[in-house]
Length: 152
Image 1 (cartoon, rainbow, N blue to C red):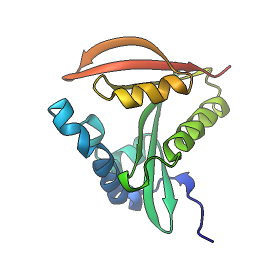
Image 2: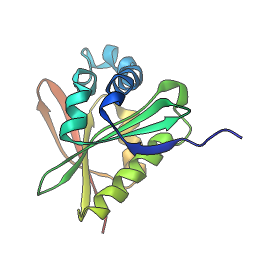
Image 3: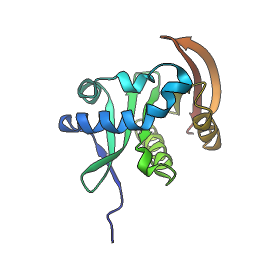
Image 4: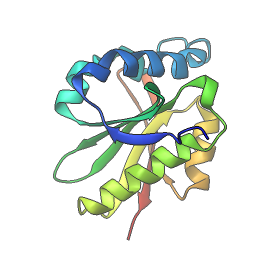
């Protein structure tokens, strides 16, 4: 029987694997957006040091990534990515549920996120999971849709 994918806190040696997973997951959005999505531009050794980064691993391979960014006001689901070879298996939903549990454990009453307006399948997924659109604005050249889920 194969091991089930497990979520764990990311460590510095994971940075290269995280970058490879994120690049693979977001690559197909470049033609749609006309630019690389923001998560493809991150230095993941810095992300691991500054934020709450988690990996979804299976057999030593990183197949998913979750990054949470916190401040006193809110917790932001900054990045959720699943390797394209493993998409469509509920792993993204598993990572999002983990993020919601982390937010609740840390005392946040809601979880916020944003996605690019051209990532319509992601917007639909988030809506199906109870996220509601709160704002749309252009930042750093990206047309973003902001969403929030009440966790209370």
